[in-house]
Length: 128
Image (cartoon, rainbow, N blue to C red; front, side):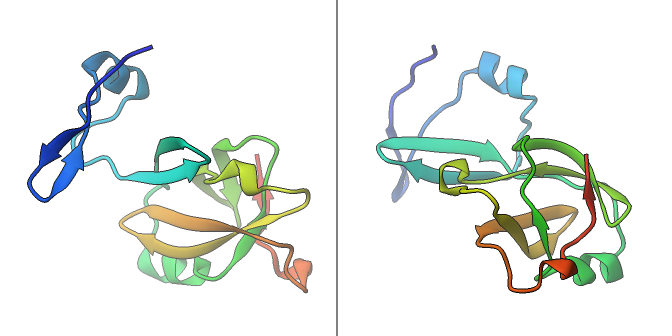
């Protein structure tokens, strides 16, 4: 286990992540991260990156949803295109639930956990 201190950084607070952890996670400068709380624990996760896709396909993904798989991170085919995925807030998941894509920006898909939609036939084709 690594330790660090919370320090003042301008008008905010910051932490330094030890190099060994960064290397193990393969995080580089400007890696986009999500921050969430689980009771009294801060959870820091890398946002899922997707393969290079064109803007029309990105736009078609917004507000679409897919069933949450058993694996919370990995690579899958979504409507036939490869994407890395990382499901946020796994403690909110009750079976079955879905993830809804709320934004696609520079090859990154942002999704939130939702309850099953009324018409699950409209879900994206999701294959591990």
